[in-house]
Image (cartoon, rainbow, N blue to C red; front, top):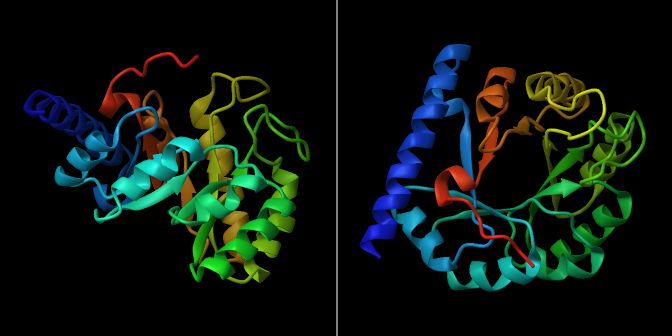
Length: 239
């Protein structure tokens, strides 16, 4: 376990240096950017080590893996983010541990989340996932709603009991006009965030950037970056 702790500590330090350098280059304070470590496919023991190393935000994308892992780590001072495409039949389970759901992209999901959050007597933060490969009003290949759908969903979240509208999330698209143009994609998300905050001033969170493009996300103004492999190592292939 000492070897794994040393490996994670070294990787985490490298990522921290990258974020700090990106913040400096963008004229931003390091405190403006929150690191979320995506722990999917890695064991609860890694989550525990990361917590000991000072990580406070972790993310998962599959409930069947996340639920037992979060339960095993329930004693740790962590904020859990759910970042994967979420089916309504998994909402009750996800609400049991997720503090923030970053992948909100349809009204039916808002309704289900609100109902289960009320039942669990929890407040759940929500990010609207924006698909920049979906045109104005379509749906993205990896989930998300087109920019034209943000306003309606945001208003619905804001009206929904036990939900808190925190902001926007995106994944750099693989197709469409922003394919291979991560910084342009993240700058577009920031423009959309500005529009959202005009109507919902508290929705200040902008989640963008992963291991390969966190610098571009920080340069664009992201408040949160979601980093997995750069901290935990290259994941084994699933299936």
